[in-house]
Length: 355
Image (cartoon, rainbow, N blue to C red):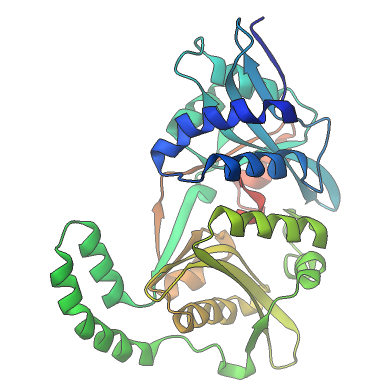
């Protein structure tokens, strides 16, 4: 009975058990009921659910599920035309599974009717499978940018993570606060040149993105229902973080750009940028607004996936770039589409990735 078939709701308990073996030991501490609800919501209640783009399970000779790959449908527009996009996620195989189960599952996804496959948090093993099956690794979108906004406080966190006793780092905290306050006098100010920050409504996020990315050949397509669903999933996946959505307006009260980031609860946490977008001639001001907002929210560090169009502005603000251990992987039968992605003529944010 060794076979691969579409994932069904009745399979969720077995897949959750497999997930707990594969991922809980690596830091995921969600309980079984929470994980059951996650698999139900993400793979069967997605507003863009597509029966032709299912997730898959591998069933062994005894009828037990010993392999899984999830598929999350997304929407992108390629020069004005809607694409069917699939994001593979949660690839896993039991230790008792026959060899090459993971490769067979990915191959099955590759054979689907989608225009593009996109994965943004692939590990080294997944990267090897992906490339062996004809996919490509996009180094440019695999990089992460980082910018300390409270450098002294961040340095203390770095020391603590490397074994320096807590009594030492606590003793240095008042000094670090003074140092960060002095450095803050030279931090970017969002209110310069008449720019202002306010909450970002979902309807604007859903409808105005093309205005800001007018020249990008490949860009996301959203609607409010899907955004509301996705951001709720993001919040539930990380209940200890706060999601901030902020719109930046210029002096004419026109949208200059926006950013979304999740912040660790309490002062001293890191901010993970989920999306950062700006008009071409206002990129510096929107990036300054992000750094200013993160400071005011209590963040010590701001980090996110590299946005190629903002590299100059990020470099000018002393951001640094690194490979963070997650690979961005793509596959398409359209060579022009692949060329645009590999050349940086695409807009990918964390919203387009795996959840």
